Amino acid sequence: MKKRDLIQAVALHTGLSPKDAAKAVEGTIDVILANVAKGEVVNLSGFAKFAKIKRKARMGRNPATGATIKIPAKTVAKITALKGFKDVALGAAPAPKLNTKPAAPVAKKAAKPAAKKAAKKVVKKAAPKKKVAKKAPARKAAAKKRR
Image (cartoon, rainbow, N blue to C red):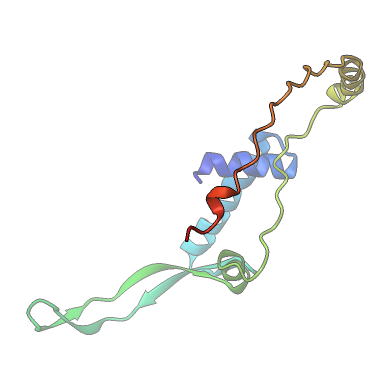
């Protein structure tokens, strides 16, 4: 799922317009990025934890030569999936139900019952059934054992 697909799904699920859903999704991402950049931990309970982690300098080993090397200190981004997300992803808990039908405007709802009544008046006549010829019964002589 790409970002635009996510925005479309949020719009359908929440009943927001696609523009409002885009603002909500992009605003959420911007707030998470800004707070993590400041060094704060963003914890969306039941979903994920976003953090900026500072790693200390340490000694490591070159796997090709076996020589010890010094690994410099660095800052990394860390995203941890939380229990609620893991349960749904692994099938231990049911996934939330999404509203995938677009919200119909009020004007269309009033027109639907009239269309249904008109559709009910048109009755299709079923084609006459064809007669099926009966097959001859299977011969029992072939099934008898030969002596």
